[in-house]
Length: 484
Image 1 (cartoon, helix red, strand yellow):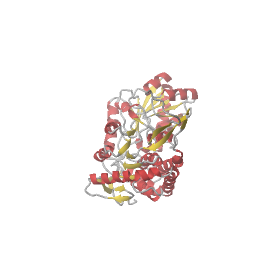
Image 2: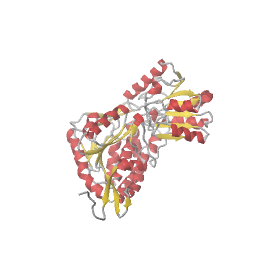
Image 3: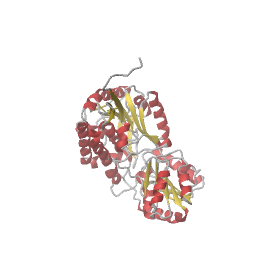
Image 4: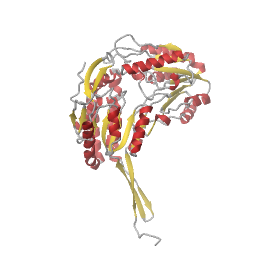
């Protein structure tokens, strides 16, 4: 196994930094339970150094022409791609996700974000408005120091999804990874420095909730971007509001997937697999409420069960493995508790449902049928490989039940009737929707939720608006007409 012990716990002001007085953060390989690295949480001194470095760098960075900032981001993208295997192996050790997946979905996705936002950094601009002989113009300005708080399921991707638009707009950032997966953001920080980012433009500090709280309440911070759970989002949003800070909240979900009886069955089953079992189900946008039109319920369940025979468990560093462990023992116990609740509430366990008898935190891909809307497995985010299959009769019923949730992150529909597909997508109360596919999130389009699943958008041109603000300048070309 690759040595993943970093040079130090934090990356501040363009260099690694350490303070062993901070609480220990152990990195454990989820496939074996083996401790593979130890880092330390940021002390108040480290937090201060990081914020001071970001504050000191922001004016110089913002003053650069957008095209120069873009070159830095594009060079960083090239470096990520050159080192994709090394970074993917670290991501696999950090998260437990199969290398087969991390090679295509993590550092590669981060590179896409840096490349795309690097390409449009020079195009960030305002507008001119003629007002008779007077005129006005707008300037799109950076916000200043931004704080990013990451989740553990896609640590490299999430760090880049926040850093790329922030830096393209001329902001600086202090990023706190999840304490479950502290390694990957350090590599991104080092690469950005190598690509030419001035010291302090992108900083990484480790820690738990107390470190996050210290960052988001600091008066130098203008913006907070969080990827996390709804309860964490409420706390962070409330704390940020005290200082009237800008926020982006990409939170959890219990997303619906509607499968109509005219759908391509294999495509729909493939969508259900991507939306429930990829990354062992640890994806916020997963379509974990699979509504299947009643006439094809049995055929759908039969084909899904057949396809799940293609699961290959084992060491995630083996590229033949396509299904890895959960990220931690705590997450394992949480998922097993949800499975027990599903059985107790009367859902039919079609397949799976058990912990795998091997080292590490593996749970079998689990499918429940005969699930009703009131069951806990249909209401609560599980964040594990557990699919709930429900049935519906017609379009109106399917839409109504799909929307009957406080979440609104994502939704999907599978049907051969394209008019119906667009009607259903328009009716979904969700920020990100798919037609005849699921969980594709290219950087060119916005990603985010509605209702309790968050506010703001990551990726796409919308992210530029969320990491910048407009200044309006009115130019009077004549005299001033005053009443006295």
